[in-house]
Amino acid sequence: MDRRKAIKRIGASFGAITISSGVISLVQSCNSSTTDKELSFFSNNEINFLDRILEIIIPETDSPGANSLNLSKFIDAYVSKNIRTEDQKYLNAMIEEFIKMILLSEKKSSIKDVDNLTLERYFSEHIDNESMIAQDGNNYSQICDLFREMAVNSYRASEYVMVNKLGFVSIPGYYDGNVDI
Image 1 (cartoon, rainbow, N blue to C red):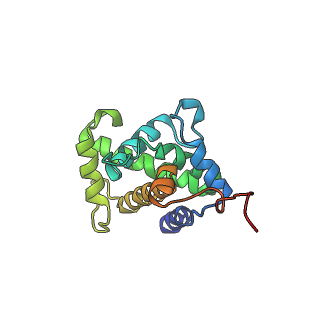
Image 2 (cartoon, rainbow, N blue to C red):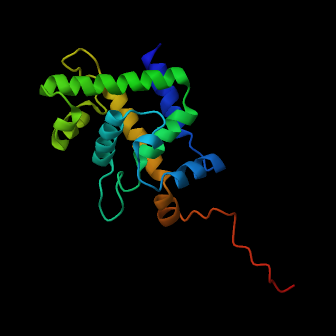
């Protein structure tokens, strides 16, 4: 499979999030905390890694961060329901490759052993840097760009941002049945 085509398809699907009843139901289903049984696509290891990367991209400030908004749960549901199976497998393989590269470089056995500053360093080295080649010979800028795109698009589609920042109302206007004629 062509790596660039798969990344473009995955990215295009995240970029094409529209306010539809399906997306609204996904947003509303992501209000509770994530448990192992609720994961649709990612493994526990990948979700923990994704949580940490998303929190690096969208940290907690005066507005909620990625972990507070359960963006990883939204991304998990979105990928499992809206991405083609072959692209899902490719995405899974890319995430696992990126994790393995970090573990090999840091000589750690688990991604939980790697601190957030180190993750941020690897992420910032590879994002928007097509010329950055890792020790294993791969270029991870595409997966880092995809992480950023997934984070930003799922943040924009979160209920908090839609209601508090964008003024979204789930019904197409206020209805008052008692109107003077």
